[in-house]
Length: 182
Image (tube, rainbow, N blue to C red; front, side, top):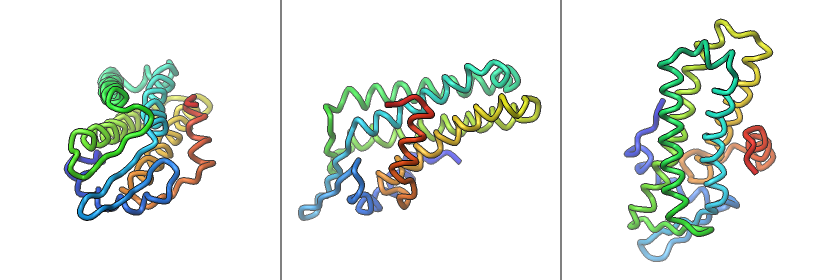
């Protein structure tokens, strides 16, 4: 399921749950709530999605049987993610404070998460098609890469308070390692 930007913004009220996480702090002063993100971690999440696309599409046996339309969808989602990651990186300098009334920065974060989820959706569709014909040893590498991406997305959503934090620091580190993100 692709999460819409509108649903993401509706979910932003859950941000308070993210306050204890190392990638995010939340403070409230009067009616203004400010979310401070560790942008290096957020950039790593975005890079993980780009690396997942590259890794899975580089497995010729997998990308060939996915079909041209699935590969095109994956490349398109990866390209959109790359653009949103670049836009996010341009707007930040090591950390980012987002007040609820700062829609520009909030939109950058929202777009990055939506694009990361779109990469996962496109990869899942391609891998389902590839699973039917590719040998287990080859497809398992692609599936491990996809699972690492899902772990990163779960960690990102936990940091933002969209879902309850369920990814441990060790699981996040392992997933980022699988996706060649330092």
